[in-house]
Length: 315
Image 1 (tube, rainbow, N blue to C red):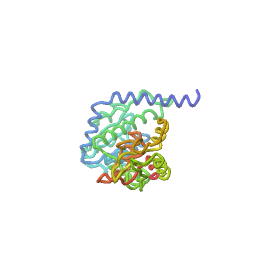
Image 2 (image 1 turned 90 degrees about the vertical axis):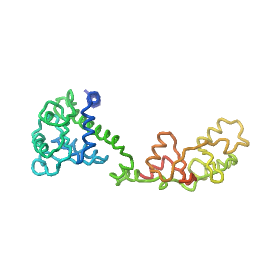
Image 3 (image 1 turned 180 degrees about the horizontal axis):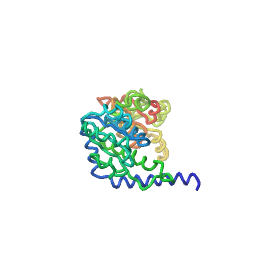
Image 4 (image 1 turned 30 degrees about the vertical axis):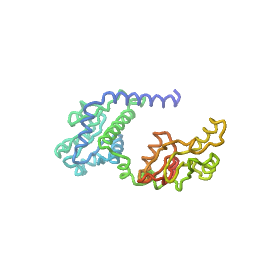
């Protein structure tokens, strides 16, 4: 079989497993989210081997989205790192078989400390499943590996379960972009989330009055270099004319003599306050399918223009 066909088969196998897992998601998932939301402690994730690698990612995602969390290697926990667990913590223990020795050995100590246990396990009837407070079933029919041995489909489903918990918690916490920025201050992501509209807007703004001729409008758009002009009079915004508006006007009108900016402008253009976060402005433009927003101050006065392409300035 060609390699590309093998690759496609892996995607199909894993997609089907994810769909099956989503269909059996029920009350224990809801209870797991509630348990994590109401805990007075942290979420500590632990797993051995490939499960441990998946656990590291789950802990990192939770921590970066408002849920205090970290990962602990089960063998190291048993040799001293159990001191990281405190009463009120929630442990997410990952073992596909539910019989991984290093993970099972943690259970008595965690119960002694008063730590609640959520199991991500492929066999709910396993030792781990039977001794956990809540069980999230990540069982799959078979691995994508042709020998049904290498953790492939099962690790994908486990990772997705962790992501599902994280996203549900984001919704429950009403975790917003500005909150996300607090945990991601570095790099282009941090810059984008911490940047305000006023930091990247274009100013001064190309402007015309409603009475200006089409020739004057074209000259202003050309000289402004932003592909637009704002139609304003005595500080009041009346409308917006973009390159697209010009082209449509030239196509639709037989004669352009006497046509003014006020005749072809888009009335009540979208605006945004200069103090808004750039990430919010970007989302607004994408949802509205526009490439420009007029920027105003707290009094509604025009202070600049924001272009969708300004995201490139940030990273």
